Image 1 (cartoon, rainbow, N blue to C red):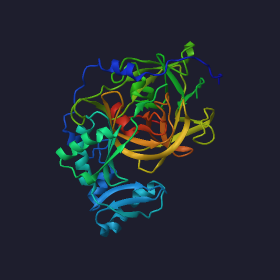
Image 2: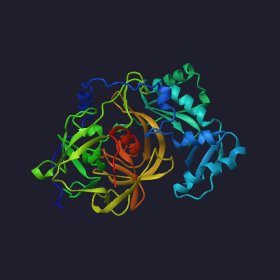
Image 3: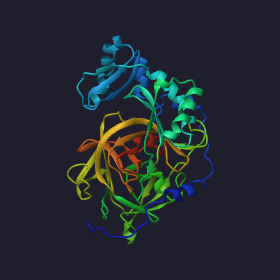
Image 4: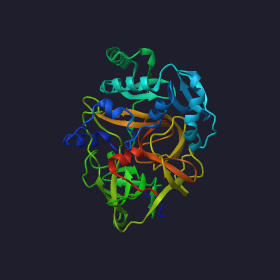
Length: 413
């Protein structure tokens, strides 16, 4: 492994990429209505677990893991506790938890919350200062994030016009979500978590994959010459100082769409992802993710072995679940999922990323593209990181199911 090469690089300026994106022809909008698009089609086209649970459990109001990792369900009808236990048992056991599920009194059913969220989110995310909308299964409410108290009145206006009960909605002041673009040595075979360079910017290699079109790696759409649309971006690892650092070329970056499930005045996708084809000369480790340090949250960038992908999550993560990411800036960080399937606006842009997951864990510029996974040795791939807060304590990722929805089937291990 070569020593780290010190070089001055421009910090990724999202504004520049945004300007390029705005020249892209407008994509064709999906044919379905916003209600149809949001109504439980999971990323693979099937229903989400919550939608299934809501059909099988009368009064179901949400399922999550509490702060102690205990499976928890909200029920508006506590007499359905036994039925909930039976229906949820397979999912609980699959997560490696004990079979017991604790029950909390819910005020609203999942179907009610889903209906209100579906009505509210397109207009809410069109408002200045809106950050996210979330059918918040851990609180049995719809939760809406705004940048400042000044935006609360506008959100409440939407709720009133949409005839959504105010008590069913929590409005939080939160930091805006920004794209994270600024381990740094040349590494072959390549693995997830390594530094990659395109143009004058740095990102992180998400994960390797085989695709029907050939050997590939996945990173963010905003880690290309233009976010949305395929321009043949060239990638290097770790830099581009020598010819043998060239690793591949962007070959698939779907354009962002308008209309349908996308709020008025915005453009949307279900993942911030793009696929690059490996150059034939480059060796790569299918399923490998670099392990930075011997424990999470230490700040170490020294590679100390690898994680191996052994499975992929089929949908969104569960609130309360512990996940990891490895990125070129902050290394291996770990935290819990705090929001699941959140429609997330990107600060300083007209982009909304639909159905994303939020994690309380460290992040920094240059971590864009980082693989997100659960486990400690043979791991389950959850997706790739694309954004976070300026304070560096929360990141957002696109689930792998959303990525495959847009890029096609990928073999990751």
